[in-house]
Structure formats: structure tokens, C-alpha cells
Length: 165
Image: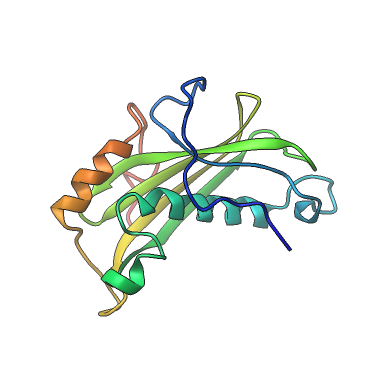
């Protein structure tokens, strides 16, 4: 069963109002994504935001696809999803992604689900750098942090900045 996902970023044509974000997905709500309330099930929101995190982190070689080669990945420490307006079957939408913060311990990834220029859902993920080999948190290399700087969303506040795990 196809979910319609593209696992590469989509070029932004400049006609959006999502300044500082990278468009990571353009799709529509499929019939099998609908729950008994007639709107997109929360499971699919998380699935989409997780896939878009992979698309974004491919830019700095920290996606799940890169982990077998370099042994480094990101793991979600905290996830926050907010729904502003439901998406229903056949709604066309876009996901816009970027970073709210960067540190040598990881990133806060921020996603926006947008339909017709209006944000319908948001997701923020506190992602921690992790070594698959040692099974421990690690510090990221300065080169990775330098690449990641290009994906910082100007003016975006990190919702997890004052929280400790």
C-alpha cells in the first residue's frame, strides 16, 4: 500500500510564506489515514513528521539511512504535536521543516503541516545525538553543526529550551 511519500526534499519555488523552512513533503491525505472521526489519524501525523525529520537530517548526514555508515543517528527525547485544524481525506498539504535550535548534543526540529497557506498542525522534536555503536548520547562534530546552521528558522523559539530530560 503506497503512502505517497517522497524521501527527498522538494525545491521551494519562493511562493510560500514559510520563511526559513525547507519544504520536505507535498502529499494528500489518503483514505487509509482517516480515523473513525473522519479526519487524519494522529498515527499518520507522527509518521509524516518522522519521515520529514529524516528528509531534513539527510542534509547533514544524520538520518536513519546514514546511521549504518557512520554509526551516528538522532533519537527523539521529546515530541510535541499541536493540531490547529483537521485534515480530511484528499486534502492536499505540505510539510515545512527546519531547526529551532542547534547544540553539540542535538537539535530541535520543527515541522509545520500547511494546507492552502494555513498551518494545520505543528510538531517539535527534541532530537539527541546518539551512537549506535556505544548506545550512548554523543557530541556532534563541528562540521555537522556548521551544515545544520543553514536550516535554522530565524526567530523560532525552542519550546524545549528550558526543559531537562
